[in-house]
Length: 347
Image (cartoon, rainbow, N blue to C red; front, side, top):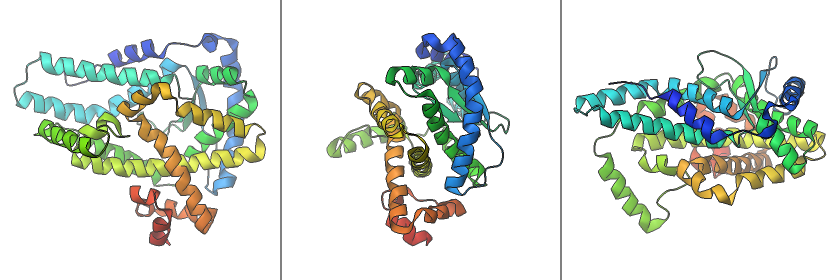
């Protein structure tokens, strides 16, 4: 019995779902490749000045296609999931599962992963990649060229301004993971902790059925965390809350830095920001976002931004630096909703 998910199959599914943009193979992509590195270097300097974080050098800038982006993330997923796959396979073997059941299950999981990444590859614009478990310590930002060109043309953005604005967001994330020495290890430990408890839980079906009945009495069965939030074990839910709190802080901080610098150096920042916020709230994809848990990601922008602005209003922009003092100083999920409580605890 194979102990690995068929990740190449996931890549093929992702490629089919991702599709392509007509200008993806044109000279516009090569122009983007030559233009983005100096733009990213400028964004890096602006972010360092705004955040006060030490940002040595500049990251490698990569322009990829939709399928390339999906496959890079599938490669990272395969490394992340390897320990969990082995434990699950061992559990299936221990209970005498036949060959067909586990094989079909693995193919379904790989196919669903590929489909999800294929959908996301049509929307994602950039990704800071130091946090991906790619097996090296590369410091790089990947931009999905097709999507950038498509948005620029659909909304008549000024390319120079839009590309700098996007770079500010990704370089703000670089500031968090390079300028805060402990952040990368802490983030990856959280992800590994989530995966470490991925072994099938005895009695899970009975527990989930009970939780569904209870949720029906008080609200929607599937919340913003998606189906994973419904199926997660109590240990996974606890870790998921810590991940959500961290990502809310990082996304909110990155978004505020991006917009704050943008207002000072870009004439079209306001229009670009409003269009991208409307894009995240696309009603045609609302059900998909909720089921897959992407709704939680979108809430992270909103809640994190509100937290950062609330901290600044009460204690000044510099007070946010207390969050970078150590993992114990990070806001909890409850404190993301109550900035004053966080300030009282870390003051």
